[in-house]
Amino acid sequence: ELTGRENLYLNGALLGMKSDEIDRKFDEIVDFSGIGRFIDTPVKRYSSGMYVRLAFSIAAHLEPDILLIDEVLAVGDIEFQRKCLGKMDEVAKGGRTVLFVSHNMGSIGRLCKTAILLEGGRIRQQDDVNKVITQYVKSSANNTSNGIGSANFSNDLEKEACIKSIRVLDDEGKEKIVLDQSKPFMIEVTFYVNEQAKVYASVTLSTVDETVRILNS
Image (cartoon, rainbow, N blue to C red; front, side, top):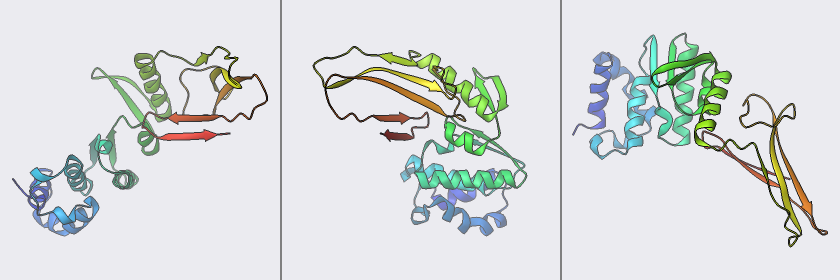
């Protein structure tokens, strides 16, 4: 039943902020959240994204030695996610510790230098962030896919041209199922041309953080 304004003071107090500190940072917190128009609306009428915006904005303006952020980027638009990453980067560069919990590999790779991979509540790996991301993606690939690093197709003589095979190769030309995101890779497409024709290749890549790239040639 409480409004966004009342929740700001309540959550700020629960997180250890003094009332005068909240007063001083109030406008900055509301501006960061981007929900100023609705600050006096009961939060029961907020969307999940608006609620998380307000909650993160309060936490982001604390001054703790350790800031624990759990899946804050799961909701909210791209602009707010960018602001969140910028704020966490600012906190980290200020000499404080940020524990960033997420399945968004792109954000983890940008923000973190080291990472911890948890599995079943236990630490499976703690290492350089790129090594941990590679291990996480490899585990996900083994658990959720058929592990296909290549695909073969039959020649369809009724078509002017058709694909014969597709392979994913690392920077050394070796066929791979899982790639190291910090290194180049190649997609090799072999095709038949049964008669004179113009052939164009288009490859769509979708990363684990749902970023899509379309390559044309």
